[in-house]
Image (cartoon, rainbow over all chains, first blue to last red; front, side, top):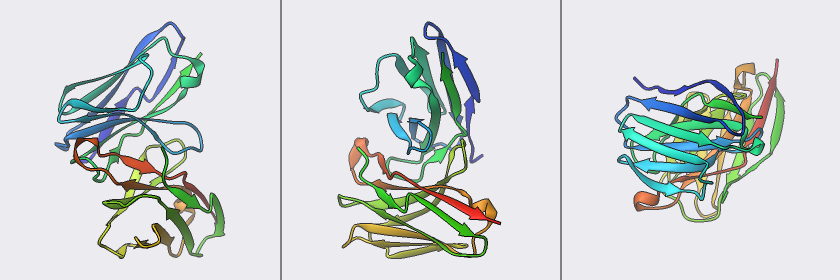
Amino acid sequence: DTEVTQTPKHLVMGMTNKKSLKCEQHMGHRAMYWYKQKAKKPPELMFVYSYEKLSINESVPSRFSPECPNSSLLNLHLHALQPEDSALYLCASSPGGGETQYFGPGTRLLVL
Amino acid sequence: SQQGEEDPQALSIQEGENATMNCSYKTSINNLQWYRQNSGRGLVHLILIRSNEREKHSGRLRVTLDTSKKSSSLLITASRAADTASYFCATDSNAGNNRKLIWGLGTSLAVNP
């Protein structure tokens, strides 16, 4: 199985809502990533988990809270988001740091 | 911070023509990777070239790496309409647990039938 899955595909939320994005891979990869991408821009790294531990936090606001329950799953908990947080959120995994990353299809998030 | 810069930012060609995209970077690297992204979708890995390699091929794709000039190029030969996408280069420069990819700004390729 060489696929990274993400749910939901689309999400609309108000600024007071709490929601979660989910990501799953069954390739035995040890590194997992959350990216945020705005239209016509490159992906911006948010968080990196290495061996289920948070290894990189790119100074992301605390309204985004990552969680890695096990080696196959990665969650991103969202709370009190702002309209400017509307974007495509991408999850990726790789065998190790610096290696080829395999991306999920993304969650298109709209914050109203 | 983004260390990769790609040119051109946008490229429009006719089907059957070749497309060349360039990527420059600033620091020494472990490897350089190219990815494709169709509109609004996830990124797909195309090729990884290591710092001790100069050229790699995969099907209609050819990637070169010049570490003395800190630059790479991606050549797509005999382009097809399905090649229409954004193409990003990404470099791996760090070591240890803080390894991450640094992404270029991307080239938007349009292949006209």
